[in-house]
Image (tube, rainbow, N blue to C red):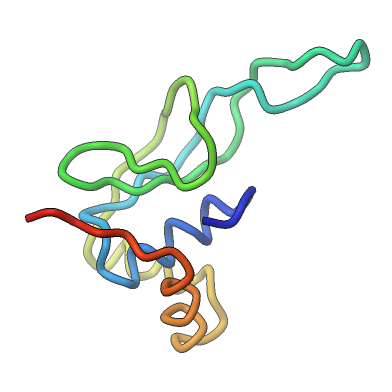
Length: 102
């Protein structure tokens, strides 16, 4: 997975057929630094995969998630919007193969 590329990572996994659904919205995590050099807990825009009802994080562990779950045509549109060409999606997805169990 590419660091800091949650939307793109999730889109590539969806287009590669490795997710059951996509979650998109916000996550709560320690991700920003304040002027004192301390981490700040905050909400940021985020996307994640869903496999068998479980969150598949594509970047780093998050504390909480808030958003919607999409699949089918909505997930296709979300994923395709992340890439310029379909070929790029397929090539990108091969960078991080994910084995699914039946």
